[in-house]
Structures are given as C-alpha cells and as structure tokens.
Length: 252
Image 1 (cartoon, rainbow, N blue to C red):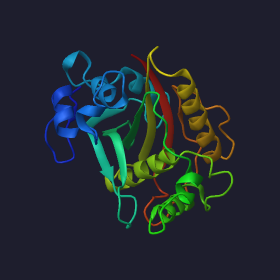
Image 2: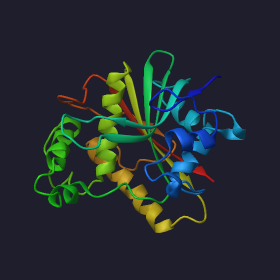
Image 3: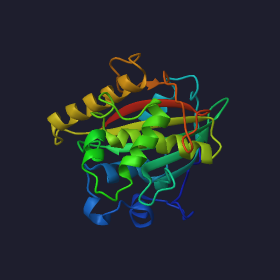
Image 4: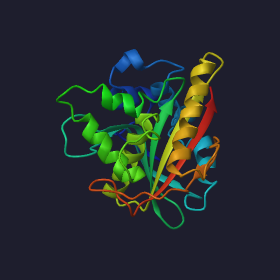
C-alpha cells in the first residue's frame, strides 16, 4: 500500500523530520516532543521510518461496514478547514486522510491527544468571549447544524474542540466529495501521562457521544466506530454526509 503524505500546499512529506519542517504544530519545535500528541501523531504514520497506515486506525475502520477495508490515498497533517464566513481561525485538524472503502469515498478527521484536554467548555467559550468576538455566533451555528438546536444546558458543558472537530470534519468531507466523514480521536498513552487528565478526556468524549446520539450511546468505548447520529446540517455543515465517530488508544 502506497501512502502519499503531504502538507496543505502539496509538498511531499517523507519522514517525521519532514512532518515537523513542512507541517509542524503552531508552536513548532516547542510542541515537538516525544510523548506529546503532535510528534506522536507523526510517528504513528512512519512506522519503521516509512509511510505506513497505523494498525490501531486500520482496526477501528474495519469495525464498521461503511469503512471496512479502507484504503488511504492522501494524508495531510495540520490542515485548516474554514467553518463559516467569520474572520478568525477555522478547524485545525491534526491529520486528515482521504481514501476509499468498498463502496464510498471516506474522509478521516483525526484529533491527536495525550493527556491534553479537549479545550474549554462550550458554555464558557461563549460567556467569556470578548465583546467583538464572533466566537459565540460561530458556536451557535455549529450547535444548530450538529445538534439541531441552540446551545442549551445540555450542550454548554460539552467540550468545544469536539464540536468544531466534528463540524470541520463534515465540512472538509463535503469539500472533497466524500460520502462518509469519520471524526477520530487518536489517543497516545504511556505511564508518564496524567491519569486524572486521561480520565477526564474519556468522560468528555463519552458525554459528547451521549448527547449527539440522543442517548443511544451510553458508554462510548475506544476501538469502536459509532454511526448513531442524525446531523441536521446548515449553511456550511452538510446533512447528506454520513458521520461516524470513534476513538483509538495507542500505547507508546
């Protein structure tokens, strides 16, 4: 299997060092450390020093008929998807992957994590926004498109990074002509990571799945790809792209 890895400008990435140079994280070398998500994400795609499909990711995709036998064609680290017409940053995917399963074009939007959090709470992001910020309006658009209602007491305690991760994955799938969009959390864990923070991330992921599935998914586990979601969509987020959400945990 030949995997093409390149940055958003089309430059070829042939090694972990290339990944840093051509598609590194915002803070560059400061964030580039063994055991942290940015570098571990790159290492996962270069097993034995050559481009390779992460085994845990392959197993996850084979757990669902819509993505079974997925063949990756293009991998793009640190890709930004515009979420709306407001100024400001879009969704910064740690990795996107385009490919095909037996019957569909599939896009993966991957959020790499160690014990880093999923960002602030949706309600806090809205209430603490500056007077001229478009963040509350952006969040409301995403909430309407993904949950089908404005931010309420059930949505406010969820993590914003999960909301705009799902939104950005769906939007990018539409832009690239994919029928299936998979938002995947790729967690990297070692004995050095904070167990309380990992547990909080696990709870936050479960809470988001529970709310988005309207209670159909009570205890979302790693290693499964869930598809019990009805996305109403909106001006930017498509309603005709099938959404799957999953999580994998890789020991490092």
